Length: 441
Image 1 (cartoon, rainbow, N blue to C red):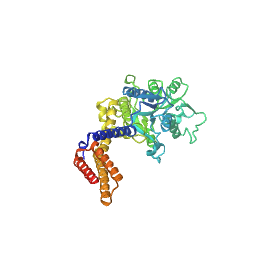
Image 2 (cartoon, rainbow, N blue to C red):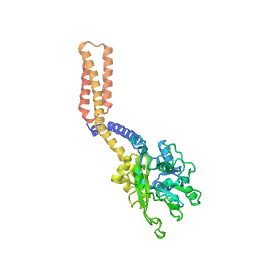
Image 3 (cartoon, helix red, strand yellow):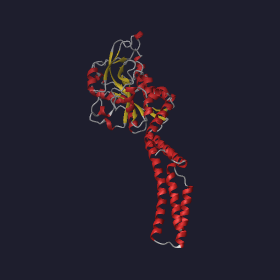
């Protein structure tokens, strides 16, 4: 049975029912299966004078151009960023390599974490600066010195303490030898203290773009350690990899640095909650590409952002992004238009799957209802005929039966049935006349 075989009234009712069903279905699918991306997202960055915060400012501009407000929350560093992400206080954060659960505990199950990496976005070398100390042979020469190791709650401090422990300057309880002073200074504050000769050395874990690193590299009176043990330390700490700062890379006119300097480096992870809307994940990856795709001191153009070497499981949208690029619609339409069209398609496909059987079932249901109305009237007539055949009716019973026949005939006359019921309706009216004649006789 198809919809055009119904009466006009039935077609109207069927159309209204389908429209209501489609509207409710669309609302439910959009509400629960394809919600709108939030327009405000919180991101934990780092110290305001650090590279993380400078990166985040660039992300903020990209997202703002696409109608998303990225609220930046400065922090003491990667450790605090990671804590905020784990507590659900922010949706996005930059986390230094080496802090993931699988790195700190090889037996940990990364799949249980609610966090995902969108990409690694930059190298973060470990820089050891001093005045005139020769630290190339190892950090044991820092014994008895004043050393800035980073602010509490920063990944800088955590890695610095691990490295110092390797050289015997920190024991298992985190204590250091008498006369040695490890200071809770990081970033520009540590660089200023070293330049003012208030401390003897500073250990920084930061991108080359960090203001503190740039300031110290540019100072001819500050020495950058070229550790002899870089290869061995990289084997000992798998989250480190050897990199080389090439001669003249900072300023070839002044021959800075005056030689190739081997360094240890980790990578910065762009980490998100696994509940982050996928559309925002793609947008953040575009922001990361706009920010980090250029060449740097330790990488060639296009190496970042990268899906390699992540501390947390790679997000699904990141996996698709690095395999196939941006979603098709986002390549040609503005962000919100592309997102609306995509959600509309995702909504319509299930609705079509629901409505196709409804279109087939609803006319059949209405057809059954109309047929049932006729059959009920046939049943009443059969009951009267059987009554007439089995006994003699009184005058009152005949009068009641005639009234009921008149009611059935009036109902049939005014009721609207589909065209394919015309012969049955006509037969029923003849049957009513037949029973009436029998009662009158």
